[in-house]
Every structure is written in C-alpha cells, then in structure tokens.
Length: 163
Ligand code: FES
Image 1 (cartoon, rainbow, N blue to C red):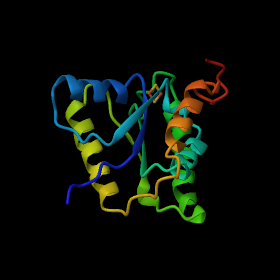
Image 2: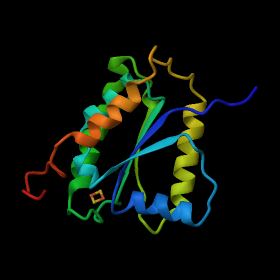
Image 3: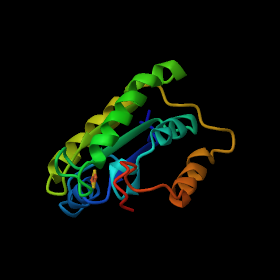
Image 4: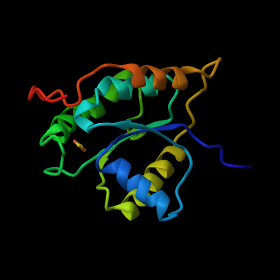
C-alpha cells in the first residue's frame, strides 16, 4: 500500500531556514514532499496561535525553523519565538493535540544538509502518527495559508519598534 503524503506546514524565517531549504533544493538533496512552506521575515513574527490554527485546520504537523540563537537578523526575534513556541508545545496536550505534531528548530542558510536531515526526521515522525482526518471540503489548510499571507502582524513583536 503506498504511503500517503501528509500535510505538514513549515514556517521558515526568510534569512536562515528558508535559505537553507533553498540551498538544499539547489544542491538536489533528496527531501520528503510533504512540507508546505510559509516564509516569515523572522520567527519572532510567529504567532503561536498559527501552530494551533494549522493543526486544528487539518495539518498533520507543523515545523518552525529560524536562525540559530544569536544569529537572528532582528537581534532577538528568535529568543521571543523560542519562549512562545515552548509554551505552545507544552499546551498542545491540553487541546488534545499530540505534541509530537509540532517542532521548532534552527537551521542557517549555510546548512542545506542539516535542513535535509531536519525535514526528513520531522516528516518521518509525522508519518509514525495516525493521519489527521480531512475536513469535508478539504479547504481548511488552503484558507489558513491565505489568512496568514494577508495577516498584518509586526515582524518581531519584541517591542523594539522594527517592522
Ligand atoms: Fe531568522 Fe529572526 S531573522 S529568526
């Protein structure tokens, strides 16, 4: 029986992880095809509610990846992200969501190989879980991705005033 592709949403910071994913593609490193990427200016822009919304909308998994600590292009956006994402990870079981469906990590633009390993390991982790039942009209994820594209939130949220 063929293994069905799962729906995994990847929120990637533009400066590091998106570059790493792009470099992995350019280097032709084999990767699973389950990931749909949402490019963020910085993980500091990542509202943890995005994780919950994606999982409730039918995503099988959510992966957030940004610059390594100390390498954030907005100085400390990833530190804010780390605090928020850690809280939401611990909160997922309260909502009845398997916490293994969510991970966050750091991958630089120079780490194409690491990106390949991260995305492969996370995809395998999601495949080991039962698939999330599809919504009847199967539009939840597409609607959410459109919402995220149009959502006017600040980049970082660290109160430093940058946009
Ligand atoms: Fe990449 Fe902030 S710019 S995490």
